[in-house]
Length: 497
Image 1 (spheres, rainbow, N blue to C red):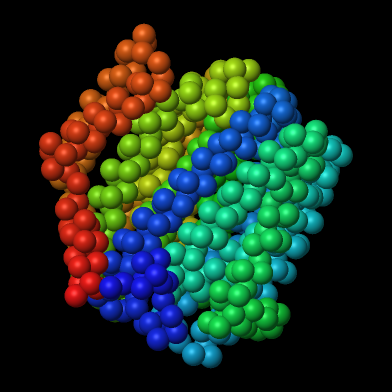
Image 2: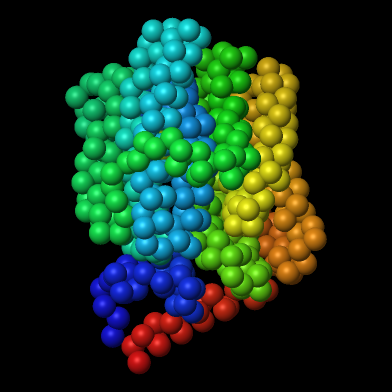
């Protein structure tokens, strides 16, 4: 009988080499399901909180809130230098003192670089947006600094495939933030208080995180510049690529804030916040597999190709379903999250929902290239996509408002998914996934989209019908990857024996 720790995907000290064993696959499947389940459960609380928040802030302050949070997120991405992903890759293969030194160096770099970045972006906000948003960005950056520290510590848990504990921490953070926002609305708080929620919740999350990782890695940061240089220089191209990827995700908000009026920014902000929340799903589905990608790329190319194919099939099915659901249920999502005053954002969300499906696929290519140490390729690719999205948003947003920005981001993200796949597969035939799933998923999506035409049916009814039709066609076409289910069931049966 499996222990409680086994069921949660939690490994003890004696199981630290799990990732190199056949049990890594079952642990990944169980852990990925746990993370996805906890995210969806936490998202229910986040939806309730957003419904309170956006109604309380109104269109103009919603735009300010999203802009401040986006600039804070830019700081995290720009100062990340790819440290979390590079660190996760290294922690998945290193052992002993070398592993501990890497963890300490990354923590020290994150603390130092994020602090400097926060000061610079705050100065930018004061100069460009004025005093209110200047202080707002400062508050948001403090929260982002604390959250990045906590996230850096959890790399150890991810590298050991202790996905159960990560799921619990993520769920607790979502619930805590939702409760804090609702309480602040009820007591009549203003914009700056809402921007401080991230800092408040992360302070509460740090003690349990430290308790979980203390026996595996040192929690003392290292400020040895020489060690930082040895860590960063080999992956400098990827570090720059990470910076461009972060800007790529946020540039649309910044461009819209500069070229459109406050209402268009508010509508785009609501759509962006919904999409941004859902973009955590590709990270859960694909990101959970990254330790296996990194380990297989290091030791077993055939295993890497197999893992890529299985994750590609699953990501394609889930990604298309999310995009389809947003297209059908956009008006309901906006009404629940922000209220009737934001209904023009429904069309924006329906378009921008395509971004989520495309990111499911493009995240796979990025993970594979990183596993193969193709840092320069990632940099060139990300720079190209950043330039493209900046130009397209700058052209379409003034012409079509928030919908123009949504069209731009969706088109560029779809292009990134297609081009990224070609980059990965060029010269690597063993990494070419079977595309037999594509026509099946396309057919299922086409049938699943048909309820959009039933305008007399309530949106919730159309949404349910869409998901049922999509699932039914996939079942009829035998599109679900049966080996993933067999892997999960077989693993549990083996444990019971």
